[in-house]
Image (cartoon, rainbow, N blue to C red; front, side):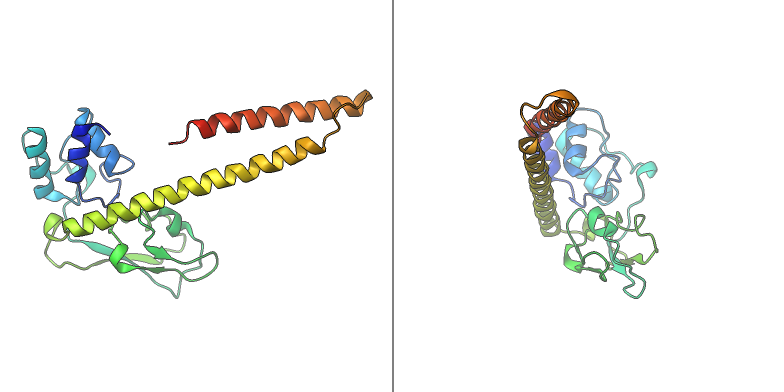
Length: 219
């Protein structure tokens, strides 16, 4: 991120809800810094959040864009455990690893880690997730603290690093299997069998080359 984007990012609530229209808070901060997004696209930050961004960027204060949502109280996800089928889709959707569970086993929400992003709700195939208001009439930054934002960012970054690590480990396993198959192919066999072996060898070597190229571009 650019220096300006870093300052803007620090002023965001870090719910990672994507309601701004960007993949996460960091992307929104960079888009604001680049002049590609307005400062009124963050419903969790609400009016106070817009005022903070206006002060940082020198832009005029705007009302929250209704296309991005409305300012509201903080809510947390609640799973009806009697209906949960253990599909793990909500685990994949949660940006802060606030849901605990595994395949075909009941899931539950770790309430202090839930940012109220609501990303788990639409992916649930049995509609067993609801959002529960936990701050009453307090909305925006009155329903959210800097400590909450710091914790959410820390967990989001830890999850992102875990996903990168798992992706790299999976890629390494696939490459190891490909190398093992390559080693099992006869190096010099005559006739049709040899031609097929050489074709397979070329396909595997090309796949390995593409994999190495992809790994070189990972963040």
